[in-house]
Image (cartoon, rainbow, N blue to C red; front, side, top):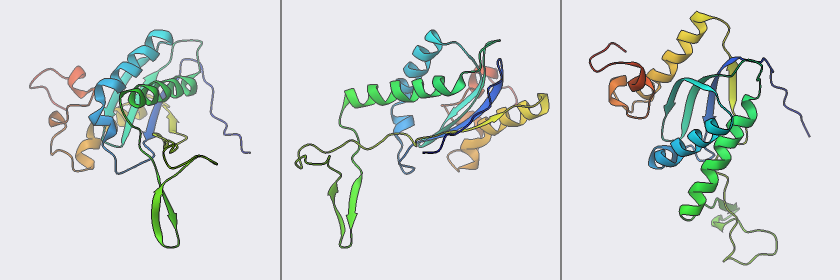
Length: 178
């Protein structure tokens, strides 16, 4: 088993990319209220500053600054992912991954020994996330901008102002420049 080693710098500012397991899903924007609640609950228990955040249908990017003396961003992200998963699953059926054999799809995955009525739930998130520790003011500005421009990059909108799931709106007055 591999051990993934992440840097541990107390008070660090970190950029994240976090993906859904199903990259064709729109779950994050469809369940944006649930995601916001998961983030709020995590921040209430383990504070951090949100420098920037953008949520797209199947992934999200964010820049956080941790409190002085605290380097535990990994567990915070795990808590957000876990809370979101639990809340989504409580509200309805979770996705079931298809099982493929040499003849094509034969149905949802089942637990060992379980009948077809006990399908295992597919993971909602990819197991890991990608992070980058911000080095300086220029790096910070570039990653905040990357968050805000990402919906344009993916062809979801033509102007950052038109994407509703972005901290750009928090940080710019109506009529302000992007």
